Length: 171
Image (cartoon, rainbow, N blue to C red; front, side, top):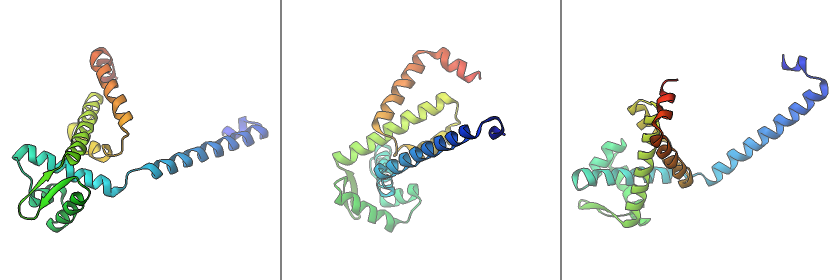
C-alpha cells in the first residue's frame, strides 16, 4: 500500500534506508553480545546473591539451602562454590561453611541494589510484584551501572513529583 503512493526512486531510497537501519541494528546486537556478560558470570552472581540473602536471613548458608533456592543438585552447588572460591568470591570448606569475601560481598550487594531499584521502578509502573520480581531476576545482571544510576535518578524524580505518577496510573 505504501509503494502505491511512492515514486520508484522513493521506494529505492526507502529500501536503502531500511538496509542501513537494519545493518546498524545488527551491528548493535553484535556489539552487545561482544560485551555481554557470559551466562556463567550471571549464574555466579545468582549464587553470590543467594548466599548473601541466606547469610542475612539465617546467619549462614549451606549447600543444601543453595540447591533448594537455585533449583539445582547439591553436587552442582559444590562445583560452583569451588569455582567461586577459585575466583576469590568466597571461602568454602566442605561440610563447614561458606563465607563471602569482600569481593563476593561487593558483587552480591551490587546485584541486590540493582534488584531493589528495578523492583521500585516496576512498582511505579504498576507491575504486579511477582511479575516484577521474575522480570527483575531476568535483567538485573545485564544492566550497565550507568543505566542503573540513571534509573535511580528517574525514580527519585518521579517520587519528588507524585502528580506525574498519579497521571501515569490514570492512563
